[in-house]
Image (tube, rainbow, N blue to C red; front, side, top):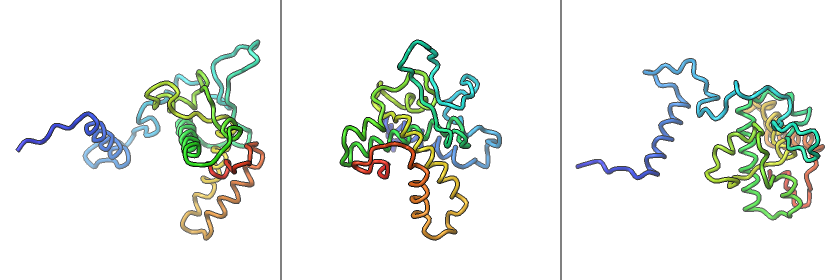
Length: 197
């Protein structure tokens, strides 16, 4: 009996499973000792992107009042996130916004604060999200305030990472610390969207 020929979707899913399996566990017969896991999908070229403390576009128009740039607060700019992690966090933030937008009660003021209608042109944190878009602007892009919120929470999560499994009431501690650290991020509280995110 012949094996059935997979359709395109089944083939694509099988390739994804194989790729992820190879990425997560080094096979004993292969040599992945010095791979660069961060650039596995080659969605980011560090050599082509300049190192910056702020997440800014390459548009340097001084006479343009409407400068298109994202900058990270000083509190979160000193984080240890690599560019690939920042891109992933930006993509995750956009996904969370889309879920809150779809499943929760919210107002337009809340959404305008956390969501970008039109993404910036050359902002490197949007690289992964733009690559994942199968058509233009089909994925949700987050605002600077929302990105700062997610980066602050990620730093708190990393701060408590060593106490996972050892500490009691860890979730309450994380929530309390998150609320303390994100007080200065001005997001409307009418539908408690900050806590939902």
